View 1 (spheres, helix red, strand yellow):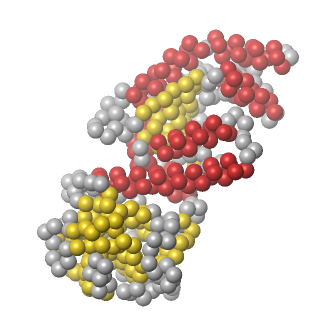
View 2: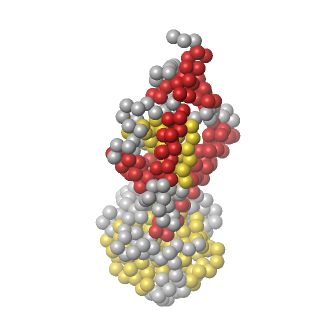
View 3: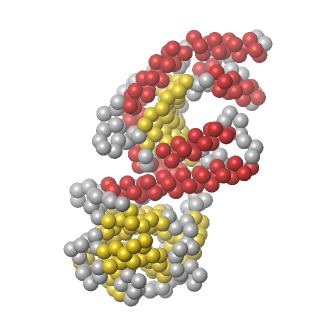
Length: 424
């Protein structure tokens, strides 16, 4: 067996011999994404940008050392099996729902025989919600305590060839965190406790940003035709109000126990608001930045625990005047229905008939949307996190035209986050 310095030199010589082929391979993978007719089409392409790189000699040396310290041995014969990220391509997209199309396109390329998977794709995430999403796509998901988030594919040109290219797919928010983490933790993890804690906090902010981006695009894309699964809600314009509800200090009713700041129930480590009292018209309100008139959409996310003796109440969210006059969406967990209600002095009065929601979610997050038209027409939608409509109620009323606040009312306990008001 050669001495360590000689062995490393032989490994480097073997890599250098294949450098040209690695360069050609990584270039072809990058070009596949950059000129793809579907992933790059339209005013808002699925792919935002693509990066590529070959691992530097210093990074290779560090990796060889880490593998040696863990008892591994890299030789000229096994170097392309042991180090599979010598060539890398990173595909960036704006929001999480775009990922599925990228994922399916990569698998289609494999099925067509242009690439061969070196191993099954793997998603890395610390967020239970993200893990649930990746699991639904059939990905192996690994929760990392480092808060790293990305999806990795290791592809070869075809079976039998040694060269491998690592494809990483992530959102732009995740890229920001990844670049900062890479700088302070790679190749050697930082020992600074304050930096590690700040990275943890940044990961939560990144996750919130990704959720907000998904919410914005879900509202925007709901302007599609009535034949689509997303509800028609008109083109999205500038948001007039947004509150992720990770901090409830701006809401009235907190001191009285109407709502409270609470850990997100699915265990993601984030916080949200929890409705804690059953009585209606009690509740909590938050002022809008400015008075609004009709022609608006109120939306957000809800989480209702499974119905039992303490639950089964109504989740009621509304947009109102300072006197409590306005309109709201009323979602009943007990009867699995949705309808629109008038709020007069804060008290709810039903408008129209309740509509059955056969698969009203419990035990995980879902979305709601209330559209108040200038004409007096109103629509209330219950949707999955992905934007599929589960139930729609309609009503018409012209009693109220001016709105100054949003309100969380109804039964308990339920959780709410990402409240958004925007014009139609």
